[in-house]
Length: 206
Image 1 (cartoon, one colour):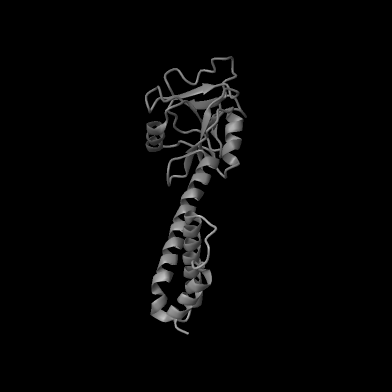
Image 2: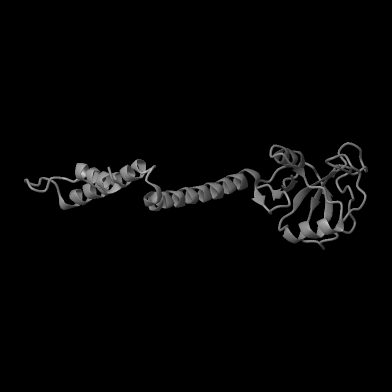
C-alpha cells in the first residue's frame, strides 16, 4: 500500500460524519478535525519507516523538534546548576554564594558544591576578582589554627597579601581570624581581617 493510501485511510477513520443531524458545536467540529489531522500525521510518520525519501519531510520536522528540546534541556540544566551553586562567572570555575554566612559556613557551602573558598596568590587573580566583586566577601584565608600564621584553605602559607592599610590588625583582641575582600578599597589593597562569625557571601573556586 502506498504512503498516500495510508494517509487517506487514517484521515477517513477520524473524519466525522457530516451527513446526519449535528448535535455538536462548530468549535467542537473544528477540534475534532484538528485531532484527526494530528493523528493522521502520527500514523503517516509511523508507517513510513521503509518509504525512503518520501519520509524526509516528517523526519526532518521531528529532528528539528528533538534538537529544540535538546537545546531547551541544556538551558534548563544551566539554570539549575546556576541556582545550586550561586552566581556563575564562567569557565574559570568561580562562583559566589547567594547567602550571607559565617566564614566556616561559607566554606562548607563551597565544599558541598565540590569547591572551596578562593585562593588568591597572584596579582593578576587579585585584580580579576576585585573587578567583579560588589559586596564584601570571604576568601579562603585565615589564621584560625595558629594566630598570626595565615594559611589558605589548602594549607599553603600566605606569600603575598593584598591588605588594606593597617590590616591585619586583630582589632577585637586577637579574635579577627578570617579574611574578607572589601571592594570599597583599592583593588590591590582590599583585604581585611574580621571575626569569623560575621556574615558575608563567599567566593568559591572549583
